[in-house]
Amino acid sequence: MTKRVEIYGQELPGIPWEDRPEGSGSIIWRSKKNPIIPRDLLPDSNSIFNSAVIPFDGRFAGVFRVDNTTRHMDLYSGKSDDGINWKLEAEPIKFYCDEEETGKSEYKYDPRVVRLEDKYYITWCNGYHGPTIGVGYTTDFNNFYQLENAFLPFNRNGVLFPRRIRGKYLMLSRPSDNGHTPFGDIFLSESPDIIHWGKHRHVMSTVNGSWQSTKIGAGPVPIETSEGWLLLYHGVLTSCNGFVYSMGAALLDIDQPWKILYRTKCYLLSPQEDYECVGDVPNVVFPCAALHDSATGKIAIYYGAADTVVGLAFTEVEMLVNYIKENSL
Ligand code: BMA
Image 1 (cartoon, rainbow, N blue to C red):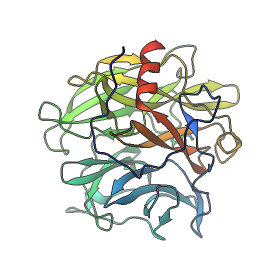
Image 2 (cartoon, rainbow, N blue to C red; image 1 turned 180 degrees about the horizontal axis):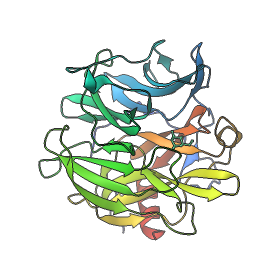
Image 3 (cartoon, helix red, strand yellow; image 1 turned 90 degrees about the vertical axis):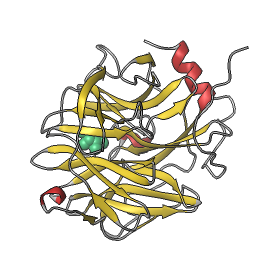
């Protein structure tokens, strides 16, 4: 008998959930309520998409990417009782900073949120003379504090691990360029204090002739399991009609997470529904958060669709981990 795959983390009985549709063989299946967040949830939102949610205070809280009708990109906080119906603040998050320079930001997008020790840390793509990784934290989702950018420009998709490993904080990121980067591998960096980052290690590269051939980037915060860190990530293919963003998954070594144990050969979710294929940027599924329940192994994945709306999809840890191991590159 195969060993039961466990999630090491908290129980979340209120996790949003829908069973896999009868007869479906999909490893990841979409919510019937998709898109769960429409583009016009706020009076001046052009689009609400690549966004991050987390259990908070018996409910859910989140940090949302909102592009407004001037097409400025910023982060907004929001709350929800059920993880599906969200109320967003009308104004973007204002981060407090110790130094003026730290808070400089031409734009903010693609947040990730992680519970790490006694705080909720937010990482995002921060405009500071080009895109780099902004870092901030909150304890209450009312007051937010900004720290130093983690890296020099150009970088995107900064994702913190949910605990220290061998005493150090770890962050995945994807060094890039100033535009719609046509390349990109995932790297890992470590820090003693979430301010100073170094010991940069290569984690994984693109794969020629596949859905992940142009660039890849970490998605939600890695989930600790009995089989390694479960990392959902996006991979990009360049078609004659532009980029296509799909989702895959990998298992990383628990103590040395720059080492890949397994990695899906096929995508697990690709833009196929109308709201994923049609929008401000067509053909994009872009995962930024995953809720999980250690008691049942249920996982709820939040992803941006077509740079316009937020979608929700589901999987189950045992099914997903076994699939990754059996269908690895
Ligand atoms: C990336 C980021 C994402 C976006 C994607 C597709 O470079 O800007 O925010 O979802 O492109 O446009």
